[in-house]
Length: 355
Ligand SMILES: [Zn+2]
Image (cartoon, rainbow, N blue to C red; front, side, top):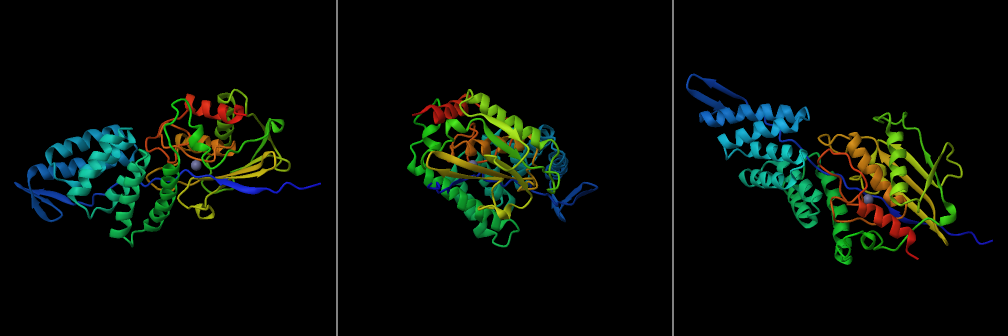
């Protein structure tokens, strides 16, 4: 009997995103009719803007982004040339889902004060979530050049490598060929799928409670995400959950150490192995810690990561450049619940029904 040789087909991605609050360390005080900021005499408007900025940042830290937007807009009206105000307003807008407005604010902040490292990083992150890969690479590259000793410089360099990979994929695939699905994009490196006689696929989910930072309930959210793909594919791909790793087809594990991944800027990693008749084994490792402290791993973000990596494990090896797709290459800034779209469903169905 010839043993089918298995080989590594694809490794999962989902690049992390850099997003940092510009921490205003701006001691301000008033003495009679004189106003001071960082020991310099400033106008009354600038002084008031600094107070509003501090209030806005407090709201940001509390994840109360709508109130942060209000305070920071007031600050920007009072002192339009205040880079930190525009920076934090950009972050607050991004977190409420207003990404285009956020980009304008961050571009303004960077132009007003190019020495503000967090503006370069956050701007790169927002270009990334918009699918503007070249702009993200240029901006992250400028950050690394200007701030080589920054604590996140290595992580950002890893991000650049991942984005360059996306950019080369993009230049090979004519994206946007179909509005209904993104089959062409995710199969650009060849097609992989599980043979129909393997259904339902046996999924083993490891217990996560011994992994630091593991969030209770993650297993249920992960199971739900598998079931959602099954329903979206109208059963073309189906799963059953098993308690033993032995003889399972797909193994899901947890880790708090992204340095074990091929690219340390990723939130999950999927490996696929294929034999003569299609896929024979898949494994997914999920990260239990956020890659950036200002992007906490909420239920919503976990959900997106789960949907994305499951997409890989059913055979979608590639990525898309449309932020609404589960297989978009980057995580979202806005902390919103995601469901599979009709495009996601149509792609899964086509992957399994195409002869
Ligand atoms: Zn991916």
